[in-house]
Image 1: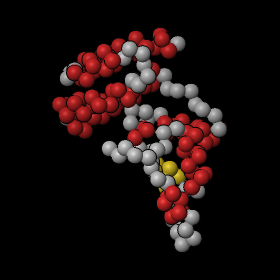
Image 2: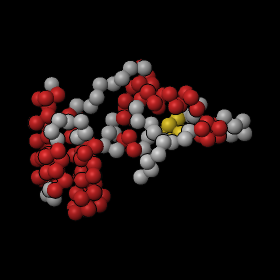
Image 3: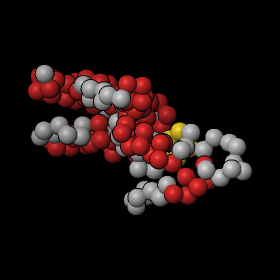
Image 4: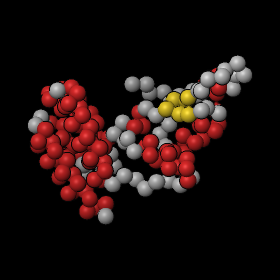
Length: 152
């Protein structure tokens, strides 16, 4: 995965070239609603693409849309929303890749879905070592039970 900062100067030059008459979208380092608006305005692009920031946080799209419409930050997703997104991702991964590969490939994503939760290391370890989808579903329910009360 690419690690360096994105250089948007060329994107801006292409967009501002008078010979270009197609929509130009920028990509790279957009990880917040504020940055999406800032880069869109600074470089004059028609839109921005989101990559890494959406991994384990698909809510970034609604956050950006809300910020662009209102200028206000949207409340962060609830624990239940985060877990439901992880559950949907798990089910889709299994449907697409098959039982074994779907479960194994999902392991790299739990950390992103659970990012910022206190003392989540043990739960993440349990999720990443379990192979049975039914047990994984129960563990995701346990996350809601353990953290929903803390969030309230």
